[in-house]
Image (cartoon, rainbow, N blue to C red; front, side, top):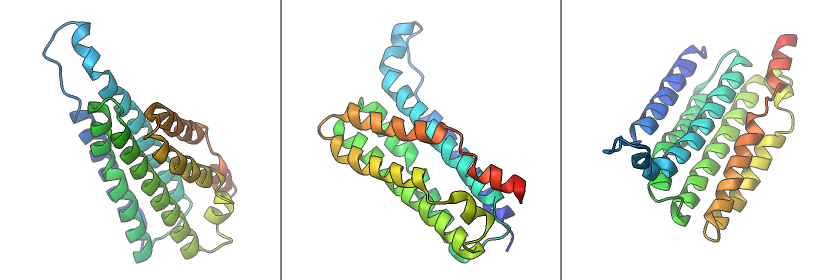
Length: 192
């Protein structure tokens, strides 16, 4: 089957996720800058999550540009990814509202870890369907960034109970790794 409906559905879900996250930021009752001060942790958690959702949207788009069609296994793998992404507004709000306390930060990392695992599964399902010599398989290569991200999340989750700010630093580091443009798929698509 074609990939168009999968792309459209995923884009819609991701747009809703971003909308839900921004609606969780409550308008303060004051009219001066001091009224915004309590919102700083909520806003910081929103910014981090917005960046993560943007990274997933961008990479999801690139994945699907490198394939021609999908099957039922890929549809379920994609839903698995969207499930974990749909939990990001909840953990974002909980983390921000509780000023980056240990348990919310650890749960935030757990959701990021499972989203990364789901993305890895989706990538493997796409490669399995299109073959190991496909454009996508060649572009993805050894999945270095994916593997490093999983390790960083696995370290950050227990670290949150010792120092939640260090755990957040790991989450930011993973985001920075993924913000650095990855030209693997674009390069292979231009040769395709």
